[in-house]
Amino acid sequence: MTTDTNLKKRISESTIHRLSMYFRTLSLLEKEGFDTVSSKELAKREKLTPAQVRKDLSFFGSFGTRGLGYDVGELKGKIAEILGINRVWRIAVVGIGNIGSALVSYKEFTRQGFHIVKLFDNDQRKIGSNHKGITVSDIQNLEKEIRDANIEMVILTVPATVAQYMVDDVVRAGVKAILNFAPINLKVPPDVYLRNENMSMELEYLSFAIMNNHTPKNVR
Amino acid sequence: MTTDTNLKKRISESTIHRLSMYFRTLSLLEKEGFDTVSSKELAKREKLTPAQVRKDLSFFGSFGTRGLGYDVGELKGKIAEILGINRVWRIAVVGIGNIGSALVSYKEFTRQGFHIVKLFDNDQRKIGSNHKGITVSDIQNLEKEIRDANIEMVILTVPATVAQYMVDDVVRAGVKAILNFAPINLKVPPDVYLRNENMSMELEYLSFAIMNNHTPKNVR
DNA sequence: GAATGTGAAGGTTTTCACAGCA
DNA sequence: TGCTGTGAAAACCTTCACATTC
View 1: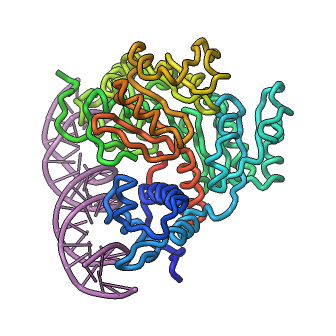
View 2: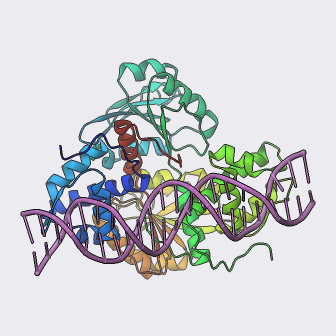
View 3: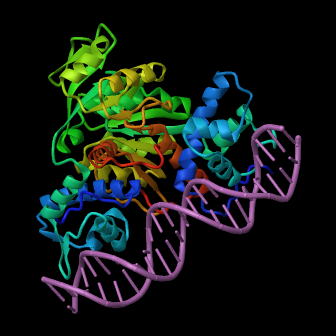
């Protein structure tokens, strides 16, 4: 076994994020026609150190060839396997406002295996309307429809005031991963993964950086 | 002087992100009618430790009262000052596609002082059209118009293929902070701050977490 | 008594440096 | 020779614990 799936060591979030970055860059390298890539080249493209790249990969196995580097296609496949994106994930978007409907057309999701297959809203004018071939369902039927459609992840783009109610419904429907865009701290049971996407935070970081001449270590 | 602006110590990115979180929670606490808050309560709401909260704040000064806690309004003001959001930032959105136009209506930005005042696109059908009272300008005039409008930050929501050209223009126009949504590694001079917003990354993290029963330390 | 502010301790992540292999 | 894989060292970040102040 080369890919060590039963990893005992705790993998840091940073490592996982960098794997996502490597994956994207490997896809690009593949398109550019490269067969192999060194940790040095990969590091250069991500503005990291070669040691960082090698260490990240070493948590999961040894995928390279000494003296040569990594096979681009093979490494890409290994990382897809590690991240769990060598498959299709069925996703629902709850809240078809400005951001919600923008995400329905976000091609990057599809490209990584994240397929949006269900849309929900509470607005009668939106229910029944069509976005990229998907009909918007009534939020009333959230729990049943999510179950029936085998949804595994939910993207939440509802107003902060109702976000917790939606989460509770979605959790009841058995969903184990939620990506939340509402600016509020949500409560989920310990077996449900919740990530918060907070776009203001990034602008606030930029604001801080300009005001303080902040010298960041990693650009992220 | 209570707010130590000439900070010599390097502040970590995590600390800055947590300040953003504190700011949002303090706004909420203010609305809920609280006058003071302890590091314990603040920590509970953010799922952090009280020591973390106090340490974060201690880098910038001492804002609390022993035995009592922090004055909600005052601390909120101090954090706004630290982050540089006690003012208005003039922002342009370049690329008025799905995501770009969604961001124009994103109220959270306005609430934190990030005012979108200019829009750019290269599509003749979009140029001249109106989004929330702002007319879309031709990307041809990017450099001059950004200068004339005193734009300080740019949100980039163009396709990856043209993103670097847009960055070069924007940099030439004197912009020092860019929030990039294109899935590509952009090059900027060392005095320009660049942040990448990568929404697939968050889904990939969720995917990894589900597949590996990952136990995260901080939820972010 | 209650809660802050902070050195010191503990833990985690990154980088170094080199042995090992193609 | 060139580049990986990895223990060990260094850097960084978080938590502890307590003196200090209201």
